[in-house]
Length: 506
Image 1 (cartoon, rainbow, N blue to C red):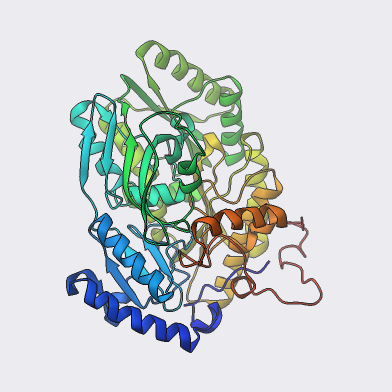
Image 2: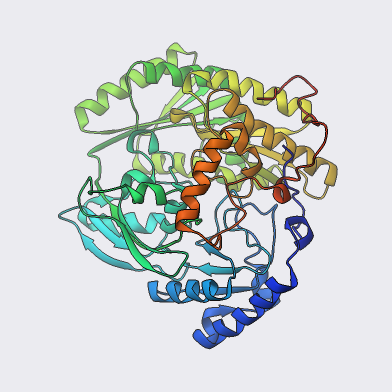
């Protein structure tokens, strides 16, 4: 299916707003102005421009109004006004999402939780903390540090991304290989439903009685309601941590080392990969000590108790050498370890050093097929005459290919979008998934039929409708619709890269 345009989205492109909808939005605006003080509303054109998109800046739409909520009561009041006037709303946290999940729709209201950044309670004995959704991911660990605890999920954007956004997208991070994704670290959430009701999902027990509605909600991308309080699980900080960077002549050799590591039963805390293009960008931006001449680098970290860490680290080092590592650098101090991770976690931002724009994908593949898929991505990139930088969570097969392009060149932008979509769908063809942690959002909605049948999509939609019967909560996300995907009746038209023979039709 064709990819949505990357140019600023207009009402015509997403389905022009009808006069009735515009009228409802105007009436709702008056209701918001009566219900909230001016400092909690953004209504001017300049202020609204900041909310036109999230981290996927290719899609843009100016909302009708933004509510800066400061409490659960604020969120519930805002949602009830939207329900009363039939106006759609879009939840938004820090705005770092990369799939267009916080993209506003025509005449929609953005409900921002960015001001909700408080720690509400800490229960160190039971290793729990209750936080508001606007709190930064890394700030949770900082608040838990005096108790010798931390919050395990660690997206690369963790110093700015919010915990509410982590819940919405089921974010992972570098250490999710060993410790799991956000869903493995949440006890309960307080949610404002699309009707404006306040409910709690989950509980204090490990396995609450009844349907697991918490698991349904986590990763629902704001389509089932807005989270306003989160009880997170905290872990005890590991006693020992050891980190290495292994250089390889090719990305395929590095990928083989990853497969060998996991097949030996060693589950490190993290296994990250950067190819030569990513290394070049990272070194230019951070001077973290990566080898620019390496075809690829693996960052491997092992943590736990001293004895186990020592044994597993030796196995990891040996397997890297057995798979033709050209050099292995072992962090000798906490500072050197922090610098290695600074380089890895700065990779997305560092791309600005080598390209004016990029699109990032988030596909998942079986670890055993890493080398094969990386070769195919390279072939696709060559066919599209574009560069692709690879930096990703190699340990669990969660790829983050960055398609580099010039956004001022319309033809090149179109090729970049087609290549980005082709890579996402390639992951599905190799037995993987469209997303591991960034979500489907507006970006990959049109690719959902490559992974799910009509019955699958219908079942998902029925679940969504049970929570969101009027369709007001974050519409036009996740599910493909003709007006978003540009579907046209008539003869099938092959994808441009399909004609090269590099991709096939499922």
